[in-house]
Image 1 (cartoon, rainbow, N blue to C red):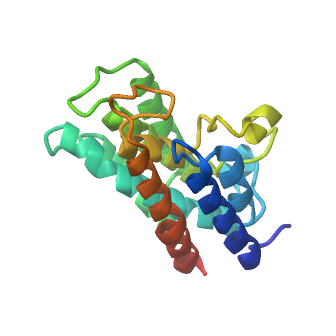
Image 2: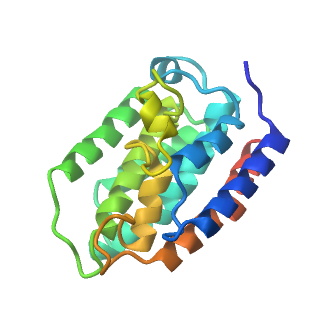
Length: 219
């Protein structure tokens, strides 16, 4: 089993920061981020992730996913007039799993997928664009990642193209949705809403604060 690699994580954080600075839209690719996340420890298959005790790598990535979700929650809540609705229950379940409390992870995965399916039904742009929708996706996919592990390798719910394409983030990657929520849209979305400077700020937070804090939480 591949264990946590502190030097590898530090090296990949630097590589990710360099990519954010080079990219005209300041958006970090899934391909680059995936290489860093794999240094957290070997990923489980989705079935193993649900049915087996959480590995160290799963726990580390789970702590990081929760931080992404927590940052997205205020965007969702603000759009809904200060009431997060049923998302509050999803977030509480996600926190409980990350904290090691006894929660049915299969149920958490189902609840996350239900939110994702609800958002897939379509929603109108708000005064600040679709940021609140992307915040919802970030929380949904964070819950799924916490429940059964992040999709990082081919055969675990992703194709080789998914994990190697430097331009696209993978569907179930909560961090990219969190960045889109913070930036107002995805880089290829509505230029009236997307802010490259806000995307850059988000990825700086993710790489410089969220990742080290997640490591400290577990180790």
